[in-house]
Amino acid sequence: MNWVRSAIFAVLQTALTIFFSMVALFSFPFSAHARYRLITGYNHIVIWLAQQLLGIRYVVEGLEHLPKEPAIILAKHQSAWETVAFLCLFPPVSPVIKQELLKVPFFGWGFRLLNPIAIDRSAGREALKQIVRQGKDKLAQGFWVLVFPEGTRVAPGEKGRYGIGGSWLAAETGAPIVPVAHNAGEVWPRNAFVKRPGTVTVRIGPAIPTEGKTAAELTRAVEQWIETEMARLPPAAAHQ
Image (cartoon, rainbow, N blue to C red):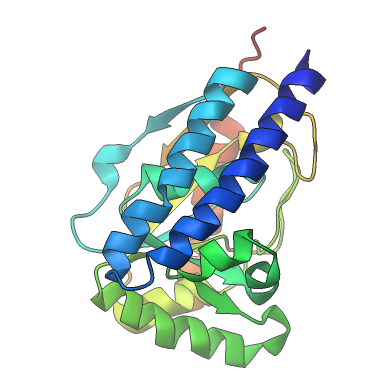
C-alpha cells in the first residue's frame, strides 16, 4: 500500500507543481511577500497531502525560541520533506539553493519567483560572497534566510561536512542563528519514491547570538547543537 499511496502522491504533486508554476508566473507584478504567500500555497497543499495520503505527520518543538527579528535558520538536511515544509513552518524565508534547481521545468520557474539565493556551489569563495551580499538584502526585506549547512541530503544516522556559508552571513550581519534538527529522512528518504508513514519531529533550538563571533566558531556551535539533538530525537513512529 505504501507504493500505491506514493504513486498517487507523486501524480498529485506533479500536477500541483505545474499548476503553481503558472500561478508563480502570473504573480510576477506582486511584491516579494505577496508572491511568497501565493506560491507557498503549493507547500501547504503538499504537506497536507503527505499527511492524508502518506501518513507523514509532524510535530514542531521550540517555536518559542524563534526571535522576533529576521534570523538565519541552519538546519539538518535529510529529505525533500523539509525543503517543502520549512517554507510553511517558519516566517517567510529565502532559501539558499543550488542554481541547477532553477533550470528544472515548471518547478524551477516557480522557485525563481520565491526569492531564493541561488548559488554555484563550485564557485567557492565567490559563492560565499554571494550568500552574504544577497542574504543582507533578504534580511533587510524582512525575509529570514534558510541554509542547509551540510549542502546536500544525508541519510539518517549520518553527518555531512558543515559548510560555513550561513555562519559567515550571520557573522557579517549580526543576525541570530536558529539551529534546527529533524528526522524527516526516516519517513521520506533521500531520492526514494516510496515514502513511509510516521511522525517527523522538528526541534528548534534557542537562537545563537552572533555578535563578536567568527564564522568558524558559529559553525562549530551549530554543528554541535544539531548533531547532539539528532541523537535525542524520538524515532519517526511508524503507523499503518
